[in-house]
Length: 304
Image (tube, rainbow, N blue to C red; front, side, top):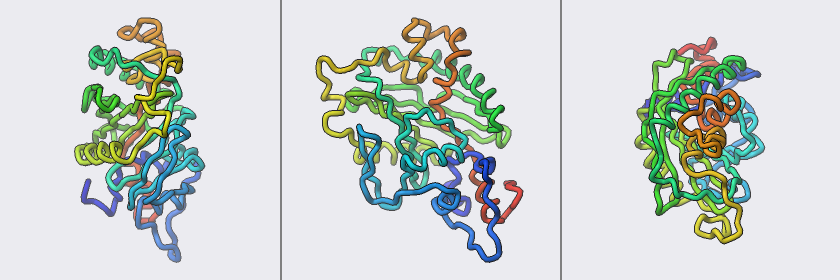
């Protein structure tokens, strides 16, 4: 997939074909879009082109490299609609890199203590997330969206004390192709003084290792909390989150479970709080190929 540039590497825009206002195929007098960015702009997404500095809410900022694009707050509703992802309200931007995408959202929950860094139970966390996604799929079906299925850890949750970053990666598939192709979502939690920047790396399995390495370098060099918001700038009296690292892996449902002491027995909570778990996933699929085929007129029915 890395070399199939005619498909724009089709990494992370699931089922754009199913957007409410499907774009019409290119006509005889219309030049078809040649890039992913052009296709998105035609679909109503405004893009910021690098190099330049872009804000990530009020707490952080990102140096956007040349050749990369950024979806800012004014276009996030449209972008999330097209990519069949539910917004939580915390989203601050999306980075479009040649081989992958990074989704950023900031949760102002306070300072997250890391005392449980050695108590991350990967097996229990995956079981809980899988159960939560099963429940979330019922809502996705009602919306007419593709269903997602989790296939275990690509990388189990682990914490870096030097950078105060929590990281894990999940194998998942979509019903768009009958769950044949496996994609990877990598989640990174960048701890700050007043909250957590949640970063999701979406890439195909084939491109993942290269994308992971590049994204790690980009975040280390180009992402910064603004002055006063760094994890190391915590002071006595600051707001402290009511949960730790395990709850961050699970999202909102994990928070409730942590408070109730039910991390390993979340069945009673899933019915009410499944959205908190499902929110940590970004749907990834080959759906962009269908969208691109329809937009260019190559295959108006959107088939592969």
